Image 1 (cartoon, rainbow, N blue to C red):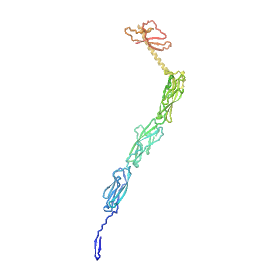
Image 2 (cartoon, rainbow, N blue to C red):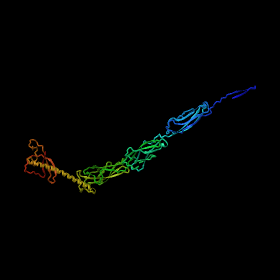
Image 3 (cartoon, rainbow, N blue to C red):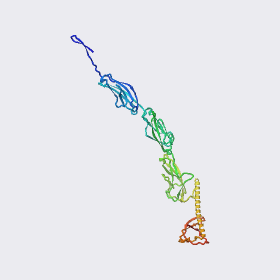
Image 4 (cartoon, rainbow, N blue to C red):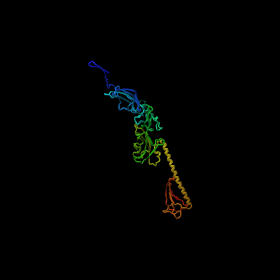
Length: 482
C-alpha cells in the first residue's frame, strides 16, 4: 500500500507500507461424514462404522486438528489420508452384552483458546444366532397320581434364548426314548409353543411306577440351534387294590380245614392268614380283624400278623366244627378290605383221621368235601391191610420152608422154650449163628391181626414127627432167620 506524505514547507512524497494481518482462532473445526453404517452384526471383526473428514480455515496452530472418541468404547479411529479418518470396531461385538452404542467424535484445533466440534453416531449391534436355548432347570421331576384323567396337565418345560427375533423363538418336541419298548408318545404329549406337558391316558402304578423321556428346545435361527433336558415322571400310588389272601386259599371246591387238638392250651396257634396288597406305602399296610365266629370268644386274631390263636382251654362241650370270618384291611384313605373264611375242626388228636358223622352237624355246602375225606380213609385202610397181608404171607412162606426142613430130619421147635444157652444145631462143633423169633397172632377176635414179633430163646429138643403142636389162645410159630 502507498502512502503520500507532505511536509509543512510544501514538499510532498510517496512511500510503500506493508501491513500483516495476524490470524485469530475464530473458526471451529468442521467434520464431514462421507460413509456411515448404523447397524453392525455381532461377532464381525473390525467392521467399518463410518468414514469422515475434518477441516479448519484457520492457519497455523489454529488450523491443526486432533480427533478422538470415548476411551471405554470397543471402537478405534484410524487416520487414512490427511484429515481423513475411519471409525472401525476394535473386535467382535456381543449383542447380548450391549446392543447399542453412542459414539461421540470430538475434533479440536490447537489454537488458543481451543475450539472443538463434536458429532455423535448411534450404532446398533444386529443379532447373530450364536446362543443355544437354555432350560430353566437341568432336569425336571413331575408327579402324577395313578388313575388320572386323560389329557391331564402335569407340568411345563421352559427354555430361554439370549438371541433376538426369530433366533430366540423356541419350539419344543419329545425326543425318541432310549428304551424303544417304552412308547413315550403314547403316554405324554408336549405343546410345541409353550412346553406344557399332558400324561395322554390313565396310568396304573402297579404296572408303571416311573418313566423318563427327553425334551428338545430348538430355536428358529439359521442354522437352528437346540438343547435337551431330561424329564422324569413319577406315578403316585392310589389305594385301588383290595388285599389279596395267599393263605388259606379261598377256593370253594377245596376248602382248607385247620385241625386243633382238644388238649391244646390257651394261645395255641391255629393258623396264620397271609395276605398281600399290590399298592405301596401305607396303602399296603394290612391289619386283621375277626368278624364272625361260630363260638365267640374261643378264637382271636392278632391284628398285625394274622395269627389265629385259641383264647382259652378247649372242652368237650365245644362243638367240633367252627367257621371263622376274618377281615383283612389296608391303611389307605379310604381303606379297602377283603374277607377270608377259616374252617376249624376240633379233634382228640392229630391221629384222628376224621370225625364220626354222628358227631358232626353236616353242612350241605361241604358234603362233597366230607365224602372225599371218607374215600381217603378207605384208601388208607386198604393200603394198611395189603401191607399186613404181605407180612403174613412172608411169615407163612418162611414157615413152609422150615416145615420142609423138619421133614428131612432137621430140628423142630417144641412147646417148651429154648435153654438158656445156645445149642450147636448143625453139629459142626461151632456155635450156630441162627436167631429165632416168636410170632404171636391173636386168636380170639378171628381177625388174624398181627400182634407182635419178638425173639424167643428156648431149649432145642428133637420134635416127635407125629406130635401136633397146639397152643391156645395164640398160635406160636418159631421162625429161623439165618
